Amino acid sequence: MSIEFHRRMLADRVRHEAFRAALKYAIRPGQSTVADIGAGVGVLAFFARQLGAREVWLYDPGAALGLAETVAARNGIDGLHFVQARSLDVESPPLVDVVVAEVLGNFAYEENVLETLRDARRFLKPGGTLIPASIEQWAAPVTADRFERDLSSWREVGFGIDWSDAERMTRNNMYVYPIEPEDLLPHSARRWDALDFRGPIESRRNGRVAWELSSAATVFGFALWWECTLAPGVVLSTSPHAPRTHWDQIYLPLQEAIRAQAGDTVALALTTETGGGEGGIEVRWSVLQERRGRLLAEHRLSIGDGWLAQ
Image 1 (cartoon, rainbow, N blue to C red):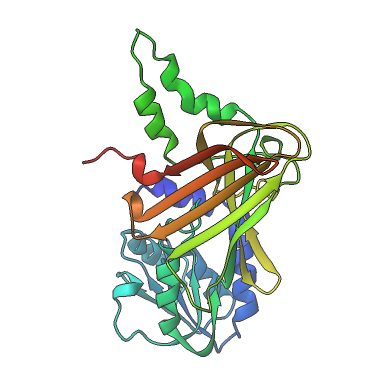
Image 2 (tube, helix red, strand yellow):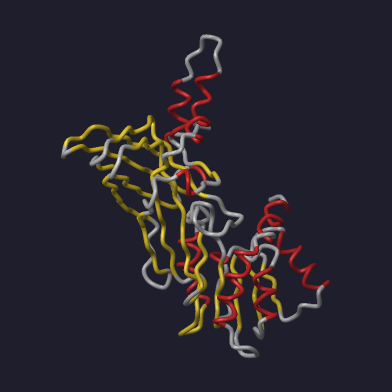
């Protein structure tokens, strides 16, 4: 992994301030022990020690952990234990008062956050604190055409060659874009999934949301984002309406735009499953357009149909 990934993440003050506030809430200075799962270059572990954690264990399988150890030595940060391994592979870990695991992607579940946090609870002492605590996922129709123009570039290749099969595959993918509030149908955010990481965690997630349009609109796709509660009163959001972070939003395309009239209903159903498809996650979405109870359009897409077989 390039250091550039970590540079961008470390430049994200919104992320840092939120996780630092959550750690401050959870840590009892001089008493609490902490495990930082997916520690990377160690910034959250360093925060924990600055906030008074007695000892911190850093778990990460990557080379970034070596850099974390170097930075800690340069800055005189002690009380750290570096474990170069996936937390899921660690047997009989020392139990701690606080587990922090920032393993969230642009699409919340893409970095195996569900499996990681489900397993991370075995690192906690009884009554210990898990950071993050819960997450919500949100969706809204995209009515701006700028992403559509990008994905339809197959039509501009020219030379008398029809690339419609390739374009169809292109649309069976999800994309990372910086989406702005003005790209969305106004006042249209709907929550499609909610999960408490302290309770049962299923790798398969399902959700359905619908919109009844008050005026005519063209829907080109859907934006997805998440809001994560790290601790009571501490929420980290990737909403287009929230302060910008190093995360962007997800864009789900359609095979063709939905041209809706006032009174039409547009419904989005989502299924995600970690461990399936390329990149460790499968995402499927279907979209219905209805007018006075009559089905006008139906779209079914899956990122499994957007990959070239190896």
